[in-house]
Image (tube, rainbow, N blue to C red):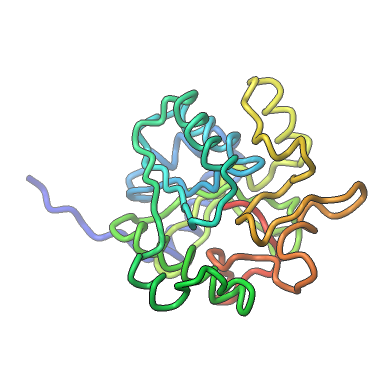
Amino acid sequence: MPLELPLPPAEERAADLNDRYKHHSATSVVERALSDSTIGSLALVSSFGAESVVLLHLVAKVDRTVPVIFLDTQMLFQETLDYQVEVAEKLGLTDVRVIHPDAEDLFARDPDNILHLADTDACCELRKVEPLDRALNGFDGWITGRKRFQGGKRVDLEFFEAEDGLLKVNPLAHWAASDVQDYLINNRLPKHPLVARGFPSIGCAPCTSAVKPGEDPRAGRWRGAEKTECGIHFVDGKMVRVGAEA
């Protein structure tokens, strides 16, 4: 058997891939990402939040066996947990990996489940960042649902980017908010039940509140604090201070 050559650095691959696929559609990017040998093995990371079903559907149409990593922080709304099961069954996803914070770490650092009251960044690190790092071990990259219209540093988001040696694939980077809603409606996809109750962005229950008419869709995340991002997305080694679903 021929020897498998190591993949070039993620930064080089991201630049080359963006040049080759810059005029492709979201579906085409997904298809190429799951078949291009220069990309390597990918997992889709999903919060199963307000807009997550769009990307999940796009990927499922191409390959239902793609590993889907779902971060159960053990502080999620029950509606999110139920929705995850519903969507996975409806789309026929065959490899959903529900991951949790390490039990020993929780006992040592947040035994009473109140860390979020004192230090939200530390809570997200414990319940999201560290478990995801472990879950992505062995993959060459991951697929996210981030989009340019979400603002901040994402206004220049490309289909492919490099982070900590991994490729990140953003098939919906160029979509508008209306594109997301049109796709939901046209494909008759199930909506997260909390959306109808005023939750356009959904995270952990203690740190997510309903949004009033006229407020920014992210206003209900960590309300009253400067924090707007859980920490799993970085640009140039710095936390991106705008939020979105994974």
